[in-house]
Length: 516
Ligand code: FAD
Ligand code: SF4
Image (tube, rainbow, N blue to C red; front, side, top):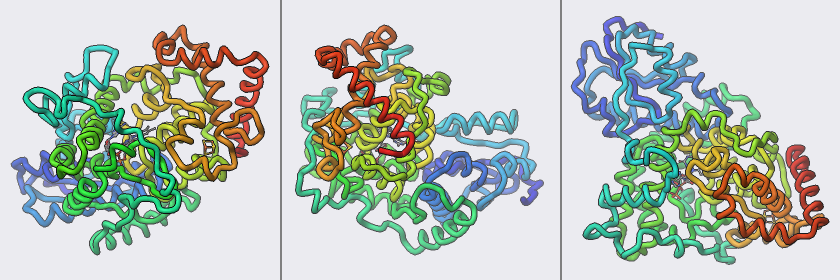
């Protein structure tokens, strides 16, 4: 590491702060004593068994950002540290600067680490990468996403007309629930992965990063060792966004919940990796969606805008407020290990094997596959929610603490006991059969439960319903949201109930042994 004793102040740009309008690029800095610094830290990259594509992507976007920045006039000296074997603070301290400036990291634990190591040297600037601030959440629960979202629409004037929602409605969810067309089994729609977005500069960067990572990572690491073909910088990201708005946004709404093995992204945007690294700002994406061509139905525009202006911002604030509670949250007290199928071990359950394959190949799968296939199964199989969280965090290209944890522990596993959700997102095979084409070519039958070819989701689902009934004293809202399923359960004979509970216990054992 190089000593630069003339450096008095370091301005650190983190790997998920790759914004063209990063505050440090607009500050008046001294070219004598201030240094802009970017670091690729291997100890940081080893924190979880990250999918190789995730590491390749972050390093490629960082390097491309540095190249693009250097083409512009930089406010001061700039140094980029490649593949450092040291931690951020070790690298930073090697410059001997008196102050280390950083824009508040989106990942709260990164701020904890920096503050703990750098102490009074650490100067924190406000995080400017999101649209909502803490005051947008009510002082205490219940937190309702719909109320938050309407306030955000009004505050930012998005899809509003004379103070009222455009089209006279805030929410078009009812129009957005179509199952996939059966023709998509043979001819799936082209998704955002169909094109390669890398140019010559990206390819050179990836070639270097890939070689170094192959040397560094264990050979049995989960995930296809190949470069992602997504944009890495603002210019190509803008073209990628334009393609989504003109080619897929019109179908996004109706088929938002549909799942198809042959189309990983279907009509989803694939924008989360770019947005979470700040390559593209949420503001720019929202403006593009709002100004989409007239033939894009309002239901699709609204549905898409709700995800970004609503869910993304809402969950970030929830996590900021409740981070301490999330560290140990485990409402149901589940403790099973994550079944090996999540790490690519073969399974006869077609929905799970197809979606894990999406993740293995692309470090991506879309929202409903995360929630209603992977998350649903983990919850029904009583997996320790923190293991589930670490898996999602490690293997998805877009996973960062502030967004993955509330989604997994809150929305998907209900480990927080319902900080913002009123009931767990669980289903039997019925939902998957209706909203996907997976069941058509599965070894199990979605309509059967106790038979040997009965879909495992069914016995596990009914067993879970029985569990929530036992938990009703802890969570009164269950009665309102799940009461109907409880009465269906109660109508089953005692023999059937016993058989279902026995089969569910066996299924959990077989899932952890990799025998499903
Ligand atoms: P699109 O369907 O095109 O949606 C557009 C944008 O809306 C996304 O890019 C994303 O920024 C935003 N969005 C939609 N839903 C959510 C949500 N629930 N929370 C936050 N933003 C949302 N999203 C992440 O960005 N990182 C994660 O690590 C992550 N983990 C998840 C884990 C689970 C178990 C679940 C159920 C959801 C998770 N999500 C996560 C939310 C959502 O699934 C992804 O944002 C989305 O699938 C990203 O793909 P896309 O860009 O094609 O999304
Ligand atoms: Fe999944 Fe069950 Fe359908 Fe098979 S039958 S694809 S396991 S839901």
